[in-house]
Length: 304
Image (spheres, one colour):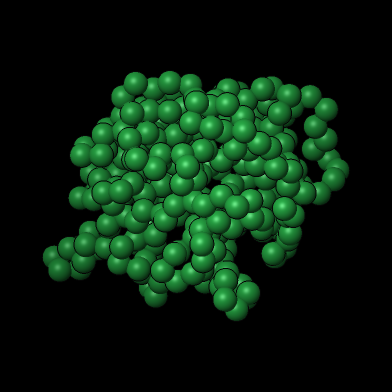
């Protein structure tokens, strides 16, 4: 097994890798304002959207995308400008950081207000229903991050990076509700912060470690099964893809982001922080991503 650099555009904050199994293409974002596409067949990458903040994305069943950012939830049909679906709930701003579509077409996303000063609102975990209604599923998080579903769709994994925790919930597919939160993984303070997350077809959870220069695989009981080193100190997220869904794509960030929760001995001033898109194959298969169902919300607005 070897880790190679597919592309290095020096992304200040590369994030949100997302494999489109229908197109056989990988999408990811640079939170600084670029949305990329990598064609597996031609090995070419292109910028498909610019000057628009994207902190997380999901495929939509219409062929478009659902985006999240610090200003809410958006729908993009790939042709026109993105259209905002929702920006707040009951006066609570949807300043969102990462997201995932569920099997019924909903979107789950966490809000983030973290600042290194220590004075910030705690984040919440939201569910955006297919009719546009927003529900608060849980709250009290420092820096909400990666999400993933178990293969049987009964468990939702959710990351709080600053707390160094990956939670597991029982997920009600009929309603999009959660219950019985438990700590799935507590990452040691000497390691990096758990960031982006995905789940493979065997039910093992993969987590990228910011400050850790690695991706980690945990078994269904939360035990560390392996750690794979990535040549970037700020490893941000990962996704399965490729024709057999057994390739792993890893994003990283070039802009150093010092925080009080850095592990002991971490140097925020020198070294290669990241900015590249990495690739590896460990012989493990992932799962096809679920898609949101939001295009009808845009169509209903147009028809009014």
